[in-house]
Length: 357
Image: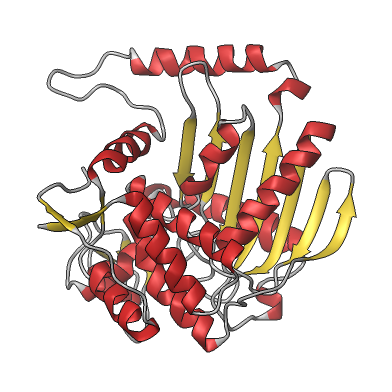
């Protein structure tokens, strides 16, 4: 059985919790919107599961509750920001707005952010751009920690370093959100708490043996998450992970060399306006033709039809918007504790047998 909540109601509640913890109202609304959007799209490790930790970070003073970004470098289509550990979701939305303005003028706009707080689910931002017929690229790393080992290595050197891309087609957007590692820290943490296992050996223990035990990441000595490709082809995910570090911490001029000690992110946000290149209609015709060919591709007997990236998330979003958004085990209980602590009424839930599929 799963607790489900009406999206607007749980968003209002989340906003009130963040405000009660001291976050500026405008920032609280955006953070709540982004977290709920993550759950609506089925990314439950990066949805409201993060709200309780965010509230803890606010009360500890690690996430700044008010203030503005500092622009440390700027050209016609480029800005570098110091986020001063303001809420990551608010920073990303602000960066997308700034990059969109630059893209409308210059064809492209890029904002690199150093010292952002955690930025939640990357997929949750993409439709903001594709709904305006724009292309968006978001990449992120966390220089304060390491959980992913280089291909062939035993010691973690970097984070899962996700890449997200969204672009329009004539039949709906393509929304890509993938880590450059096989799995994420959030999923490893959840399974470790539940004493569960991964479906495949996606981690290495400290001796380099492949394992499906998420506990390997929390033991002493610690194991590590493998890059995309695993033991055989992990050089590909490893290379992508290094690229993300270069385009986030590298471009921002703040990363592992400075050895920060708190939860945060280095981020690159880029907006591209197809109208400034070969034209929007031509772009959507090209992207749409390939999407159509993929969806029409023959499959083996008994197999599901080919889907495009983001198609499942959009279908879940439509379904959960009607039926209510399901929250993973433990999340409602954690939020009830914060609601009681901060004096915010907890919303009624519906009990459902539905689960994300």
